Image (tube, rainbow, N blue to C red):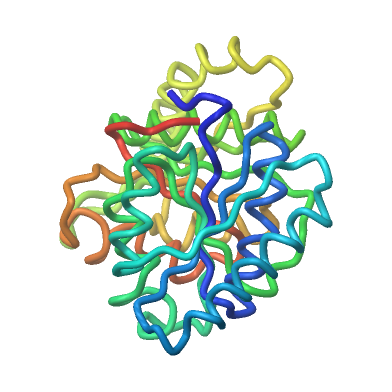
Amino acid sequence: MSTPDQPVVVGIDGSDSSIAAAAWAAAEADRRHAPLHVVITNDDPARADYAEKAVQKAAAECSANRPNLAVTAEVATGHPVEVLLRQSAKAQLVVLGARGHGGFTDALLGGVSVGVATHAACPVVIVRKGIPTTVGPVVAGVDDSPCSQEALRFAFAAAERLGTDLVAMEVWHEEGLLAVPLTPADREQVERGIKQSLGKQTAALREEHPKVTVREVAQRGHPVAALTDAARDACLLVVGHRGGGGFDGLFLGSVAAGVLHHAQCPVAVVRAAGGTS
């Protein structure tokens, strides 16, 4: 569980996407009544002046827009992923930008975002450049796994801070490529069962967050497509991952990988172990 004195950490590199991430992180830190720590990584002495100016500029913009927010800045030495993972051990949230070109080469594969989202000790939010501010709901992808419960807890807290509704969504499909399609009556029965399960999973959190209006949705289809579509007007999409530490657990054909690749709103990735709100 995070504490108010733990910072929200935002990693920047001076790009437009990272500046957008810093603005989002500043707003989130303000909502959490937490300090903001702006970090840039540099191992090149020739770029030391650029790095210092970039991080100070980002911090100054965050301070100007959020005058009551405590903002600190740091030029760190080391690999960006390693630096941010160390920062995540003492943070309540890490925020990063993604270039949003739509391809794994630019936004995810081999990049800082994927490494941090996979291994961080706290939740990670990926913010794309140019995402419009919406007043839509927080959308949470749900199943019956421990990481899903952590993601749902994170989503409830986020919806309460943002003053918006929450959509708890479980996407299902017939098992196996050769499975016989269910009849309409059987589909209705499956969806009723899933909605009942969702109701049980959200019950305690509803009591903890009585101001949050929750809608449970059971939908047949592909999880990535369904969640991406549901979040097209969302202010945040929340998904969990099992935190196994390797790419197999998160970024090879997984739901987390898919929504990071396709969602047009900020995406929060929450681990099963050590997840915080």
